[in-house]
Amino acid sequence: MTYTLEDIKKYFSEIFYIENDSILDILIAIAISAKNLKSDAIWLLIVGPPSGGKTELVNVLSGLEYAHQVSTLTENALLSGMGGSDGKEKSLLHKIGSDGAVLCMKDFTSILSLKEELRKKILADLREVYEGHLVKATGNGKDAEWGPGAKLNFVGAVTDAIYMNEGDDASMGRRTIDYIMPEFSQEVRIKMAKRASQNIDDIAEKRENIKNMFATFIVEKQIGMPKVFPPLPDELIDELISIADFSTKMRTATKRDFHGNLTFAPGHELPTRMNGQFMTLAKVLIWLNDGTLKKEHKDIMVKMALDSISQQRRVTLRMLAKYDRVTTKGCAQILGYPTKTVLQWLEDINVTRGCTRIVEGYRDFWIIDKGFRELLLKYNDTDFVGGDLIGDESYDAHNPNGEYDPALVEEMTRNQKDAFSELF
Image 1 (spheres, rainbow, N blue to C red):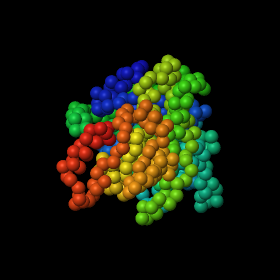
Image 2: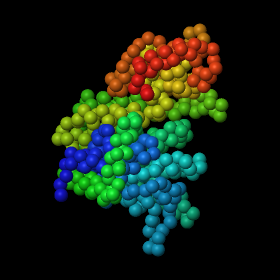
Image 3: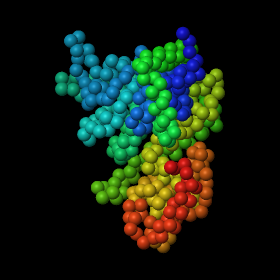
Image 4: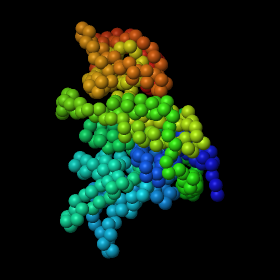
């Protein structure tokens, strides 16, 4: 049976509540591009709360013969050097092969919860897998090897615990582009629960139907897939580069000591890897849509670029873009975090050249880079208010006994929240 993309989206939305079904187009493009060995590998992390629908999105590709699903990974799961009774390597990468596949991981969060040494080993292996070549020394005197020239696309689900693993562990994030599930209002939470309750009796059968529909559609499309996708328009290339450049600069990890003091800021990550992934996605999506890139597809790629910046920096950047200048206290008052915490976020953005710090009297003023402001105002649905966000300088979210006028603070907080409602 032949299915259209509209058939698939309609059936999926009848079973699972989904606010932005463009993510289904992205998943299909990732699966299709896996078999084009000339294109960059695409690694996507779907970020969201528990029971928020992440696993259902990862599962849609598991009906493909070249999709391999795992719950988590151990140190030697990818490549072990251990052979079976026939003497052949039996590890996951050799099972997957090297001619294009998709690895689907339902619980990437479990890797983040491992002990530090083991976690770093697995993340190091994954970095090499992204590049298409992994070699591991074994105890039998013979190296285990996968690649070179192999390709493996990746789709994984993770909670926002990933933001607690910035710094050293952020090296994994540098290989991925992220998609954050939309915020769930109370209304949406109820809709999701009702939709789920309507499918309790036959949900297993419906999941199989979804996987089969996706697999059938993707395999049929690949029959006519060109060996080389047509080039993108110059204007689109420039746009993709600009958002990739902004994202990679602003997600560059920094180092702090155990007191929380900033000690080191490495050179910026270059945009080439992220831009390559967006270029591949754009080419596949244009091919799927008869030579045009839909607005919703460009919008979701912009969203993924911004989502690939840590949550802490993302909300701080939006605050900076909203006003001409902001103070540390002003940001802390709006965001509801301790002033010291917000100061660290602002320092990180400053040291990665996202904003400038100016000292006036006892206040620090922070001013976002002009080009970054323009980009956020253009792509992030952020309205410019202007002026200085100062707030009540005696206010501290974690020091409610400070000397200030509670009524004034309440009014100021309410007014500023209204002006910056997209943060809440």
